[in-house]
Every structure is written in structure tokens, then in C-alpha cells.
Image (tube, rainbow, N blue to C red; front, side, top):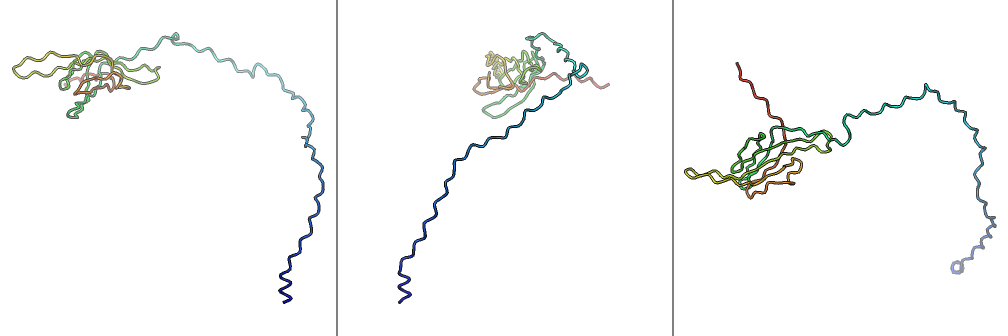
Length: 184
């Protein structure tokens, strides 16, 4: 039982910790002061070392005069029949009417952007007449103008052809192919 009594005794408390020594507040550390640097002895620049000034840029044109757009004689147009989903890409020469189903396209001018312009684009002034083909034995109906204005290849929805059955838009402008000489 003596072992039991020794186990039941409360544990002895540890001695109190010694008091911490007082520390004086630290003074702010100062950076070491370097002696002032001696001035550099730089030799003067001679005229042989100096590059000549660039010559003034020669202006090809007076400022504010834009370059003219290049004119072409063929417009490439794509047309879509919304009922049958048939599309056709065709070429229309400037001044010559071209028929797509009941529409007649006449290109008045076709231009491409000048090299100085930021966006490369093609524009064409087009008139589109709706002229259904006449039935045999009956006179042809008078044409109705469906569209008249500029078409832009980069923005086909800017000035669209508004027709219930057909859509059409400009693809590009190009030069006509030279005629092929007949073989001799």
C-alpha cells in the first residue's frame, strides 16, 4: 500500500523560472557612410566621334493628299436563293448586266482600297433590278429596282440587298483576264 499512497500524492510543483534579464532598447542601426566618390575624368568628344544628323525626309506628296483607289473592271459577286438554298458566285463586268434567276446585276464601278488605307477592302457601286422572265406568249414585266448603292466586301451587312427571296454580296474586285489569242 505504500506504493499506492505514493502514487496518490500530488506531484510537486516545478521551481519558478528565473527572471529574464533586462535588455536595453536597441539603437537604430546606421548605414556605414562611404566617402564621396571622386569625379570621373571624361575626355571631351571630338567631331570625328559625332555621327552626322540624318537628312530630312523627302516627302513624295504633300500631306493630306490621299492616294486614289485602284479601279478594276470586274466585280466578283455571290448570290443566294433563300428558297432553294442555291448559291452562285459569278463575275460581273463593269457596265454589262448579268442575270441571276430573276435579278439583273449591273456594276457601275469597282474599286479596291489604296495601299495607305488601314483595312484592305473592295467596294462596288451596283444596281440590282428585279425582272421576272416573261411567260411564253406574254409580254415581259417591267423591271423594278431592288437595290442601288455601294456594296462593301469587308462589311456585307452594311448596305445589303433587301429582297424576300435573294441575298447578294460583293466578294472582291479584280482585273479582267486578257483575251486569249486564237491559235494559228
